[in-house]
Length: 246
Image 1: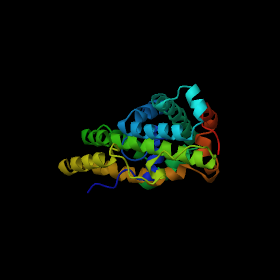
Image 2: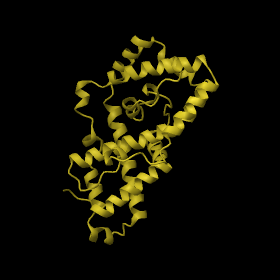
Image 3: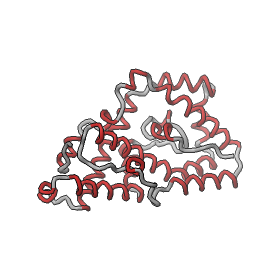
Image 4: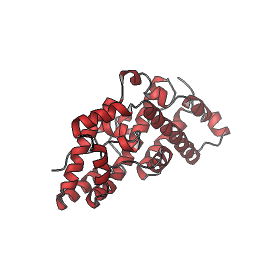
């Protein structure tokens, strides 16, 4: 039976950690800049960027918006650039505060000293590759959700005059463009149709990765991560988009 995928806490971290420590399906070998760029280019992100533009139009200074010609198209473009910049910053902040040694010790204790090497070997298996590819749209959607949810928290804590962007923050259902359910169903079908000891072992190791990942964040690190660190400096960029404080 397919194990539960895309657990929220691990996925939020998985998008930000180096490839050798990332969590459930779909390790990201590309640099943070490329990952965030791809995630923000998806149809799902496009819908949420339109919400960003609508919030700018509602909450921004009208005279400023007009003077800077920030219509909907320009607002989407500028919003994407802002989320790109600070999404990458978020990933770097998490990475800088992740204790690799503590993580590796926890993983070795639960899954054996060769766990990381075994994961790397299993990534070469065709069935594992297929599952990772099928799951990728859901992983990209989770990257978008994580960035926007942290941005909404930054806006709230910083008393920025801008409406909530993420569906969960707005108390709204996920838009139909969110590919998560379809991706998870596709993975489930593949696993049902292609029973594989390699895939089952891969899932076992990912369970261990999920359990070990929080060990990489020490109590001291907890004071250095969070929305105000992830989006430090965004108030200036938002001011340039005619968005001020409450």
